[in-house]
Length: 281
Image: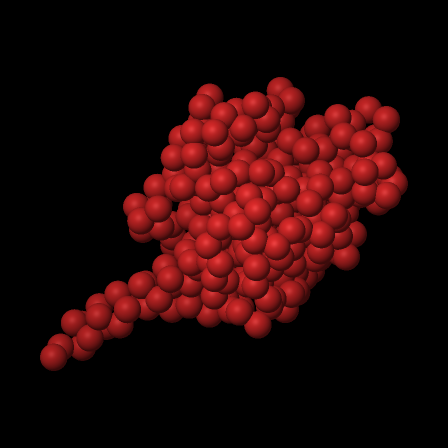
């Protein structure tokens, strides 16, 4: 058996393992919002978007920034949309979702193609398509690649700029990967940090995937572990010197981009479309 053939077989096996990790078939079938699973805690239920065909769909609303303003509900994070129902599509359309951002690789999109959301345009920003398959199997390595891989940085930059573009017209944007926990988790963490939400709030949002997906940090396939997220933040600090440098030099966002995102997504409690009193002020 030739060395080249052996290498190709190894790469193919690694690719399949990576896809299995990224798709992360849920341990419990059924949405937590349809009565088929345990009810969500009140502090997480306020974020939930009730869809039958997904289990990890939620807004970034209610998180408080350092300046006292709150994140509005125009940004939705989700797992893939391959099983959404017509009613789910209508629910997202009623939320004025005009852009769906798909962060998955080509093979993931082929295995679980999204169903369309009426009135929404889909943008594909593949985070890990250019990374080594063997890197993707190890989630700690994947989180480092979120920061160091040029294709990943381009995908996260494009995601943030598309969020800016869509929300400028007071429309909503939904971004997702397969399970809505890793690539989607880092995108959410970057956006919330950029908006001024403290690290405790960012980590709370990240770890909520374990509740929405009915699992725990010990489940490497279905859950998330805070050490992975901290690895990404530590990598940003090591490579760029600070998170702010990562945003400005790594993602190449300008001061104008950052100001626009804050202006469009941060609202005072009195002007916002939601009431912060529902989560205790």
